[in-house]
Amino acid sequence: GMFNRSGLYEELPWSMHDALGSLARARSREVALRNADLLVCSGPLVLCYLLDVLLPETPLVHPICSQLLWGAPSGDAAATMLLGHVRVMTTQPRRLLLACNDFAAEQCFHQTGVRLEIVPRVALYLPAGSRWSADQPGGHWREALVLRSRYWHRLPGQYFMDILEAFLRVNENKYNMSFTMASSFRPDELPPAEIARYRAVVLIPNDVTVFAFIEMYMMGVPTFVPTPEWLFRLRRTVPFGFIQPSPSLPDLTGRARAASAEGSLEFPLPPFLKESGRTHPGDLVNFVHWQRTSELHAFPHMPQFSSMPDLLSSIETMDLAGMSASILLHAAKLRQHASAAWREALVQLVPPTAGNTTAAEA
Image 1 (tube, rainbow, N blue to C red):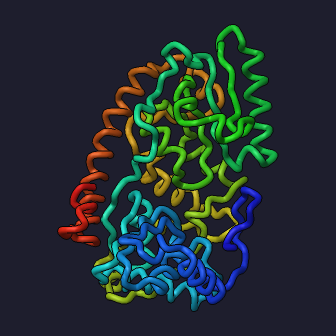
Image 2 (image 1 turned 180 degrees about the vertical axis):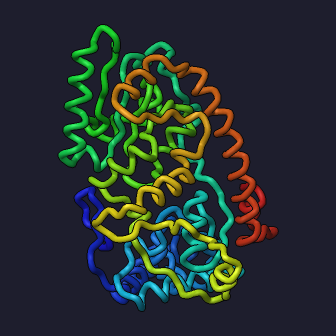
Image 3 (image 1 turned 135 degrees about the vertical axis):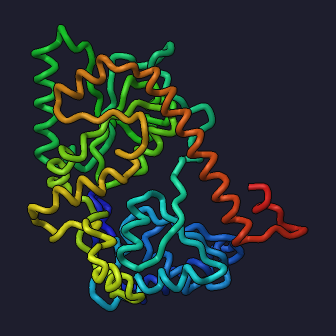
């Protein structure tokens, strides 16, 4: 496979040739795949490329929510082919590429020269009525839930929790709360409705943007994340894949030369770190700039903390009910925007006919 199964998601060597053969065999077995009216490929891009090759007549939409070359075979040839294919796909009537957030859109433009429409993720799959309810009967008002993260499996993450618990013990008269690790539960023991019963959620993200945050936001759960500056230090333990160095296509349109001639740059801060596995002085400025374009730090009404005392004080004193209500108002606007964009995309890719009204009704 592309990644190991340990939960750390390190990339593994693999063959695109063999993978395409496996997909062809899956198509032969799966009637639903052969007869699909529309494919939604969540990624990575290399998988969407293989599906594009295998099923060229089937409409396909690819929401880009991760680095374009994530999981792809290494080497300049594969990178150039895949990035070039983004340019080709965006010209095809049966193909639609969208970006999940500002950062994904800007990174795609940096690598390929292609501008993508931004359609936010809104977790429409959440059960109806999933809303923050910690202040209601049955709520865990004195507990904050720490979401799963690779950070907690590393030594610095274990130190973080040890120090936090020690700080709580020393200040037990001031902070009457406890922290529960989501990793101590099976996934089926923490359905969305149960997570929404906690007073607050603490998230140390695995990357620039994570799906778990979107789910919390759409339920109106007060979710506390580190400031971009502090997150820059924390993420050095678990490097963010989205901003690791990655190839880009050469300047195919002359836009970079034109910008240089005008004395300006379209990307004074490239959306990548300078070198994998090392920290350079300029990385902090780059990281903070682009992290602020992520949903975690761009969406309104989201509390950020810069230290453990700051985290505890914020959870203890903030108007969490008012915060949740404000989040839900903005979440409703995001859902309206996303629903309209997806409805238009479906009509574009699968025009309604007399026997097929799915797109028109979506």
